[in-house]
Every structure is written in C-alpha cells, then in structure tokens.
Length: 278
Image 1 (cartoon, one colour):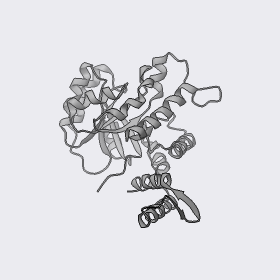
Image 2 (tube, rainbow, N blue to C red):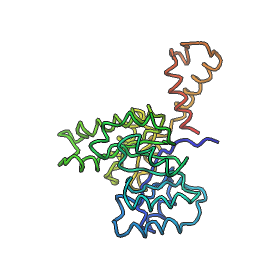
Image 3 (cartoon, rainbow, N blue to C red):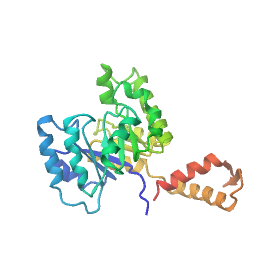
C-alpha cells in the first residue's frame, strides 16, 4: 500500500528525552528528530546517542532525522543514524541546489531526502536544479528564519504584518520547484504555536495554493495542520468522479462531470487529491 505524503512534519529537538517521547506519542504524520538548529553544539553527541537508544518504532509517526549541513563534522557523525531501519528518511538543511541532494545521496543510497531549500542567499537561485537530480528526493520545504539571518534582515515581515516580498518569493519558488522535481511541497513553520487561528488560516491557504504538508514546531499544531491538508469527503468524491469519467473515456480531451466541463489538468489535480486521501 502506498502511503500518502505526510501532512504534518513535526520537529522535535533530539537532545530532549521528554520532548522526543511526547512527539512519538503525537498524531503527527512524520517526526523530524532535529540534530541541527535546536541542539547546541555541545549536546549533539548526546542527541545522537539518545536516538540510537530509542526503542524500535511500532506504528505512530514516521521517523525522519534532520542532520547537520553538508561538509561539517557533525554531518558525518549524524549519518551513522541511518543504519536504523525505522528511520524513513533524512532532512537536509541549508541545501542550495540539486547538487547538494545528489552529494548526500552518494553517501546514503536510496534513503528518501527532504531538502530545506531556502535557508541561504544562494539557495534562491537554485530551485529549478532539484528536478535534475536523480537522488531519492521526497520533499522540499522552505525556511524563513535562517534566510532572514543570512540576508541580515531586521524582520521577515512587511508593513501589513504578512511575509515581506523576499520571503513570499522564497515560498512560491519552493512550491514550484518541488512540483517541477516531482517532490512533495511542504510549507514552512508557523512560529507562534499559541495562535491557533493564525496557523489554521496559513495552513488552509497553503493547501489551497498547492502545498500538501506543513512543518510544525509543537505537538499542539499537528491537529490543525492535519485537518487543513486532508481532502474533504466532497473533494474526494469530486476527484473520484473525474478520474472515473476519464477512465471510461480515455481518448476524451474534455468531459462533463457533475455539470462542469473538465479537461486533462483537472484530471491531474484529481489524481493528486486522491493520492492524499489514501
């Protein structure tokens, strides 16, 4: 059975036994055990040992690990963790192009990779390159916090309180780049985990635009994210009707379904909806 792409990707600092246990018990589709930004340099070795000592995964969220950036000593040490069979994939931070994903895959083989692709200034010029990699690229997400720091920005927000143009651009390029590469487009974090309405609005807007999942930083965000990226019963029924109509008339270019004219782009979108409802 093919698994639907994760709707919620929950970060958890890998050096906190309490937070790790809470995350494993959550309803997140995927956990990202973080060995990078949320773990201080002098605690990274202990975080790796904590992950190595975890009991084997039995159901619950799928397990991913955010390793440290390429060409760092911690990156090399982090790769020892992929020997665990219950680690589904690797999250690569600070990726600047498809070449970085290919470089990682040369070391990790066929293990799926989720690349965070907008955390440096140079990364904004490489979003199309991910379609050229032959590595097992499963997902692409974007990050505003590291990008803001890299650019020396005093704020990532505009006068209206929303994201400033540069960060909206990074977000849109990630969406387009992921689709071009055949990877899952994953929206970035919503940092105020107490603002449920703000998270709901942002997640629903992301789903409407074409993202199929979102990063989370707190278990309290998971239910809202899962709901936003789960196709409704009406959406699934409509998508199935379109797929069935084209299956019955495979040579048709345009069909009438439910009183609406639909064509091949509608079929592509319908298949995507059904793939997310598995």
